[in-house]
Length: 287
Image (cartoon, rainbow, N blue to C red; front, side, top):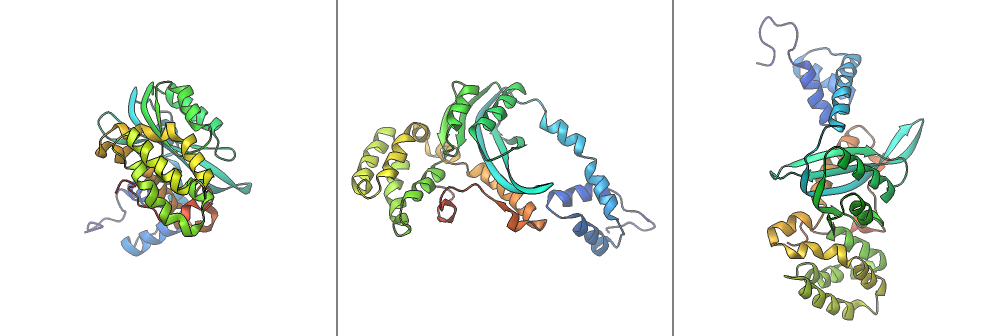
């Protein structure tokens, strides 16, 4: 069934190799796969030549024209150990857009030249606009300093929504581990409030309860309030889409699996602030 009778060669080897590569298999694993499943001998050089054929397609994809309008974009970065003469941490900037048809599209991936920074993000957004992305209604991002300004420098009318999960994680930088669960319970009425005024009222209750013990957390939320509240203007279904960067982080999880499959599981790390990544939080903060 796999190899028709009297056939001495496999058809569609290129497609099989590219599919396996996209799933994170190494060159050696692909060679072993052909041997075990098909009983076919494919050299490592052949596999490498096949994967190199898509280089021109990747360049074309990276510079393709974009839609004029994206209702929502998600921006995030992951940091990976890259060997380029020497091993160094390299941030990879990822932007995912939601089209007017409701489809998700990776608009681009860029390798940075240092730590994640708002200046590089500004270059990314400028490139997106030059490729045809004239307008963005809502941009969802983490709490990186200077990022909202970089977004609004490119698209003046764009509403910036800070990821709630990142905001909660950043809060834990100032809290004792023994109080984290209680803080989540106290903050939930704030980010699940039916309106901005109700959120303000619930936050004042939170500040009265925790402000004396953790004034830095209260100050963090006050300074981030303008980027926190936009999603409260929408109904629950839309809130769940725009209140976090989970949509793009699920894409980053695929990159992690690909890196892990290639034997570099100890060579990459996600950008973390404090001990945020250790905090068990629901993927849907409104659940």
